[in-house]
Amino acid sequence: MSDNTRIAEREQGAVSRQASSQERRRMTLAPSVDIVEDAHALTLWADLPGVSKDRLDVKVQDGRLTIDAESAVPVPSNLRLAHAEVRAPYFSRTFSVSEDFDLSKIEASLKDGVLKLTLPRREEAKPRRIEVAAA
Image (cartoon, rainbow, N blue to C red; front, side, top):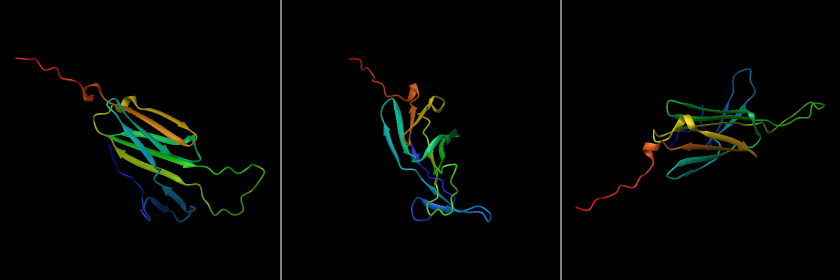
């Protein structure tokens, strides 16, 4: 699995700023990830602080796994935000996934701002022991 971070404009490492003429400036971050691979599966944990399930989009297409998420800064309904110096970031990251993994069986869960994705290996890609006959 190789990391191909996808950000529209890249500044200062993994942080960029995007803005249209009418939209406010929004920060886009590549979420930090931990990846563990064993003989049966690959497990990816992505840090997505402030992201809820309804603001998370995980897609797989053409061997690419994409995570897009939007963080939300909660503002009580009886208050009006007059000034904010910290904007809720948008997270985006794309990975190329080897054909060794079964993309139709990916499992995903989100808990405490951490997304866990499990990508199982295809049966034919799992390592197997070859018995050697004595001649």
